[in-house]
Image (cartoon, rainbow, N blue to C red):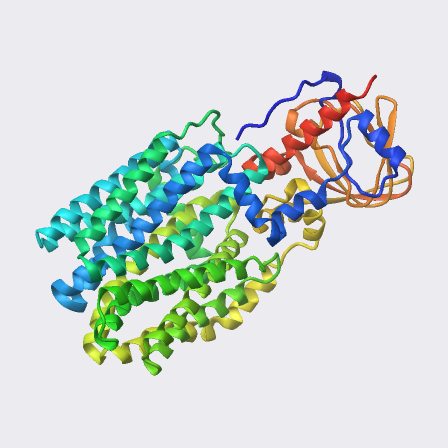
Length: 593
């Protein structure tokens, strides 16, 4: 991420920035001359949390040429992936019935499950825009080859190329997520870019299956594969024009250990931490049900609703439509309890599948699958935030890599298990059995989930962190880690908190009290919720102002390493800090003296 530099005076580089809306007008004048910036909490937080700003935020992201190209390429990739999923299921069913659908799901996802634990490190070993371009071209080539194989009615080759498509789709996700921070120029752009990525994924999950359903009913699966290849070629053309002008060095780097050791560390963490083991187990169960559902959708279209490929597309698209609604609902999740909502989402994942057997009507199935899609989006947000709370930050990447691999494996196993269930008890009873799995598990583990919420409840200082706009771009989990690291400190009236010329070792938030800030003879006052000390930490310069308590005051201090780990480890938060510094410098240099 690039931040435009303003001309700066060395004397002001380490100035302290108290932020507060309670200062008087004459204090704001002093603040401008002293190089301090009034808090822009409302303006910044509105962009983050106000739904009415969503359209303008996405517009800001798409005004960045590189972000626009990457997001459009991502839309092409996700639509092609889901179109391929529908066409592959139809092709497999026509070739060998329900069993062939299960085998197709297995070969499509098994290679992805094997490489997923390694995927997070690949984006750091290659230039990310080129890596993403290569993956897109790989997917396009595999889809084009699938079209040729389908035209020749060669099931073996169609399945073989399906594994390549699945591998490409799996690796595109982390590559995209790693690239965006190097393209966004402001915190607003990065936040909007991430929002665009999520929205486009839900749209692709909706549009891809619908288009595939129409094409397989009017033409054949080879046409769907060919169209998917063409769409990915367009995405590749867009990615070829992406230019990374400045590269962000990510804070989360490997520790030099082997990939085998990284995976082993993640496995041990999950096995030995009971709460993490439970959550990961439920994730795997949910992905197993998803693999079963992928097969059952094809079975329902052909055997229950007496339809065809078009119905497969429409039923799959219903999940994407529900996902859009669920994504909006997930925005209501805050820093409170998450394990219980996670368990509740599992219930709504399973019950609609069971009801599809009770009410075997196509319109009802569309609605029920939309509920499944909504529950899926809600569950994703809750469970991954919960894992971030449970797993130590230094092990989080490798644990998530392990979870990603297990999830892909769960879908693959579910894909091969569903045909056996259908053969054993029939299509409609199979929906009942598969749909009952997650509600039963949620009931059996509910007490343990409630216990997890009690043990990993947010630190009471989280509200204080939420009121600091510098931390606004951070995830809930990261904010909680920062809140837990705060150290309460008390200062008597007249006691010096920071002395000009000292080394910067802490970041401070005012909990209660009043402090005088003397920056080169210019005075301003810091009150409750104001913060100071970040510039010396970000720029690694001495303090250039003295802060003294004017009344007995309570502060919260964040050690230098904890502050830098949270802020510089998140591109948007780092850029927010730099933006505050740039604003302060511009205001300070604009004043005479």
